[in-house]
Image (cartoon, rainbow, N blue to C red; front, top):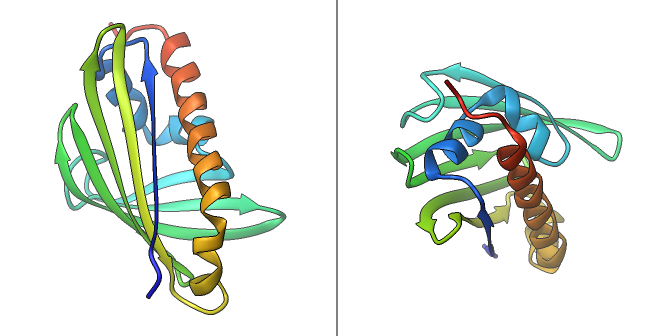
Amino acid sequence: MFKTTVETSILIAAPPEAVTQVILNPDLAVRWTTDLERFEVVHGNAGQPGAVARLHYLQGGQRYTMEDTLLYAEPGRCYRSRVTSDVLSAEVETTLEPGEGGTWVRIRWTGSGRRFPLRFLLPLMRGSVTRQAEADLRKLKDLVEKRPPEA
């Protein structure tokens, strides 16, 4: 099976705690994730291993749902999940590292198509997957940097 890996990062001018508050908030996910209409936690609690969510997307006029299972969490530092649908399976790792001027957020996405033709097309789509991940991180950065701190 062909696997495609995409890695990208961005420096967000906020501490890891502020970034974590946004990335673990299901209601805010739609504001920084391309084509996501709704993030619905169906089991467990967001940010805790074993939590399961349904991700409802609208892309190119087509609706689809993916399941996101949080596999690992080191609060404020690292989150790893498996995202699956009938056509795609991916592991997504998000790491946060304090840096000068804020927090480095790194995304590593490794996925493969589960059916023809995506099984063969996904490696050819690496550039578009990378651009989408970069755009999502820019939206995350804008959201975190403009969000008032929690009291």
